[in-house]
Length: 496
Ligand code: BES
Ligand code: MN
Ligand code: ZN
Image (cartoon, rainbow, N blue to C red; front, side):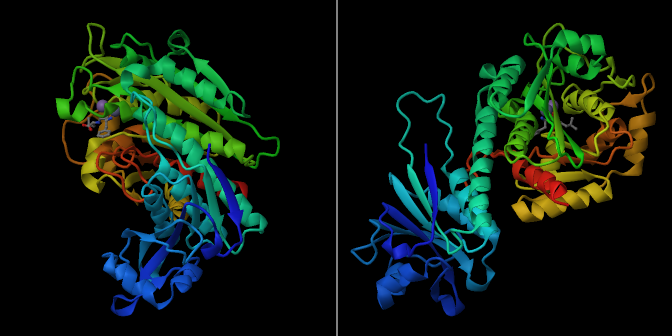
């Protein structure tokens, strides 16, 4: 366990193993201590900038140097992180710099963070970024895990303000639920089949105000949820749906969260090539993110009623697998002609969206690792964002505050029409073999099932998983993308 304290103190007097400050690059490359780090720089005096320069440190964003303290300050070691241009330090840079610091602590047991943290949003960013950056997934490594920092002191002039304390708590809470979501996404698919995932979710919400309901495969059959059942049909591990609810007494409105929970996506009979299958354990990142978000929303006691719908299934091949050409009857009663068993996400989401619509929420937010083409379009750090203009604007406003990147994409009228008219045998055509704009086609398909409820759909196929090395506060592997934006959006509704 790591303890966090917020302290109004002078950074050069704190006796931790490490003290972290930010350094910016001013005119002509002059190194300038960022807010929060001035006292440390002053303690070194005029030799400080030349010392940093001699270590090859230039102050560009993400640059890092470990500096001996030699009695200049009370901490045993100084870690400086580059924050880039002096005039352009943003909250997001602070969040990322805190994450970079977390990964460069060595084996320190205690650390003081003297990064820019005068404002509550910065305190949140420091704590969220740092804790998020500390994340490691070692559950399947033999031997003892590496030690973790035990004590974190966040230095802020606003330390005694109520909003500062709340910001620290929010940062910790978000990092905690995000860590849990990342663990699930990183867990190998043989250890997290649908019912195991459901059990994990049940345990995670057990001693909280979130209630848990499991809709089993047998119950899905009675209901007529042909989309979820169709996808789950090829697997030995039956599908299910988890429904989570947070019902505050003083609710000012209601939000439905829907998260894609494919515990493994082999593609089914439309099988994926080997390389594309390798990290398909992450295909339940939407369900993990939505679960994390509702946990945080309940812990914060936000006065908005929230329900999460998580269709969980494994997309496999076998003699009982769904075939291209099959027609499924969705929960809504609409029939769907399946053309590509690898476009399974929209099939399970169709039923979950229908369940959400039947509960009459004010808005539906759908989160899914839905399409590779969205990654082709936007890369792996930006999510595709679809929906009605009002809801899209609301998501963009929340994302502006959390630093997550979304890009609004259109649903073209021709694709809307293809979905509804191109099947010769069923009501809807699941997949169009025309390759262009497949992320948009998927959104057009989902849109059928949201009826007239305001909605947004996040295609997180790219940013849910970091296939490269860590950057900023984002680790390699599962990222937890969209959790903070979901929580922020609901928080904004609660306070409006
Ligand atoms: N789970 C995949 C999407 C995905 C791809 C997630 C890459 C993360 C990284 C989804 O079920 C899928 O297979 N989509 C198809 C879409 C196609 C049929 C339009 C794909 O990516 O090829
Ligand atoms: Mn697929
Ligand atoms: Zn998938």
